[in-house]
Image 1 (cartoon, rainbow, N blue to C red):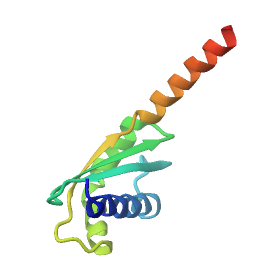
Image 2: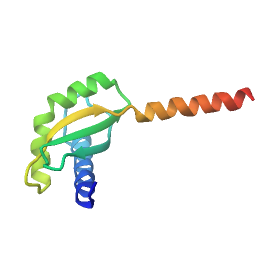
Image 3: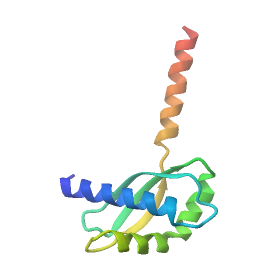
Length: 111
């Protein structure tokens, strides 16, 4: 991974977080945190990982329905040669970490 790609990933993540939090008016999209954005080298695709406190299926459906608006708004804010196609993916790493933490706590409590 190059420094340029890391910087693009970071900029896209920051802008998407802001767009989703402040400009998307879909009632299914509530309390969404963009945890990571992975943009391909040729800027054609971006995998956008997110978590939510709400229903993850409804949120994913809402994000996919607002994908065009989000991409257009991203194009207005970020100066890139190509604005990538967005693919939203629910980030399960936080839940996985919580389960591991609970197991470790359970082991320590049993000792």
